[in-house]
Length: 275
Ligand code: 2HA
Ligand code: ZN
Image (cartoon, rainbow, N blue to C red; front, side, top):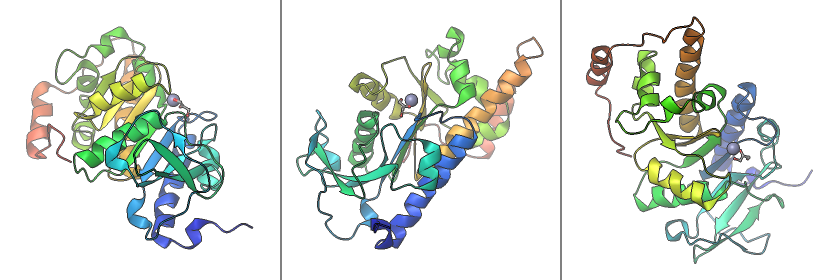
């Protein structure tokens, strides 16, 4: 068997094992059909020596100065979450952003091309570095119930804060507000993989940890990939409860505004991004 970089870097292995664990959950939940979804983790802190390129530079067609020289573990394009769960280094790769911030090279382990959603992942990673955030992970997935809600125009109304979908989800169980206190931002439909989708995502992620990609999925940020997954899981659980309650025919009652304000107050929840 060929030697993997993971045998030289123990901490890096544990970070990539976590990505594999999350990929397995995503498959089990039915959020990762075929090659659906992708993830990126900034692993620079776990790589102590300069890793030589194993590919020529690939232009990103954008310049991302704040992540120049940094290393990322990235799911491969056309690769399956369920396969990444078993063999993460065959279904993902480690890239380094070139020193001019305009291209990437592969550094490990194989010639696996990064995800089609690389513009969103790296533009958001660049923003996180720029702002001194402690967040290291970005996740895109297709959670069934949240996507279902995004087919209802009423749920996409983003003119209030909290917006309609956030208020609806928060009001299902107190834990939704407690563990996803910034709610769910809304990114109107854009072509998958496009720079337009990446730009719209970047604009919204400044205020939210999780944003909806209308009629497509979600994009989330977190301290690590488990943190990003947990926030999506919490919000999607609420969407599932909403839809199950809706089956009885009428609009579910939801918690009152007062009950929600009490949760916000008692748990001293943040109302704006502070990390
Ligand atoms: O990785 O989910 O949005 C495939 C996708 C593109
Ligand atoms: Zn997708």
